[in-house]
Length: 247
Image 1: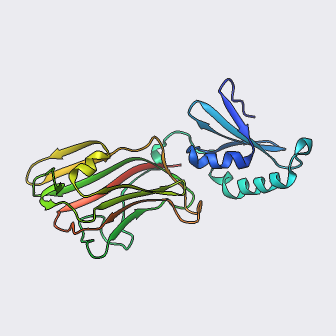
Image 2 (image 1 turned 90 degrees about the horizontal axis):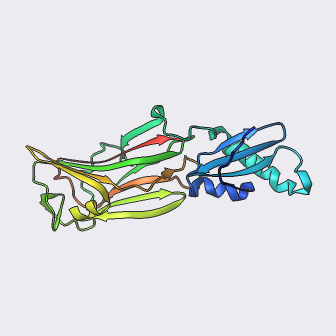
């Protein structure tokens, strides 16, 4: 039995609730008894829910549609539901975005002729909520602004370091970075450490819930993608690093 108490509530059928899962980053919960599933999720201080009947629909409702909804929920959502609505430390995932064709994770490669793509896709069985994304650069040169890309030994990039995301089955060109300012434009904060090597770190501003759907949710997988489209091989080291939680 589930009681939502005095929380504001909205309800409808499964065809209404299902798109909310991705558009509102809902972590699906459910309760069941002998006759029905109560499928629900939290959107801030509001509860969204629907009822799916296990057998006959009361009051002469659409039995055919209900049975299709029941099959869809049981086959594609039930096994991944009732996970924690909070970040769980044991479910943390933290890694550099890897190259599609293999090799090291450093973005310091030559992509001027053939672009080099770095991409992360969620695994089977888990949505990923990204809560931290940084770009890190290390070099013996000094960090530069103006018409430079990060370091004073590199001018404006011709094609740019391209950051893209596909979430909720929608692809977005997030930022094309040709100069240091292009990184700074999309960051919450940045750090510069000088010494024998200079470190530049840009902490990218993220939406409240950047959720990448688990493998198989859509026709093509969600992704976090960085494409090197210029020659960055003269930089000692460069990396795009993210942290999130499996949900």
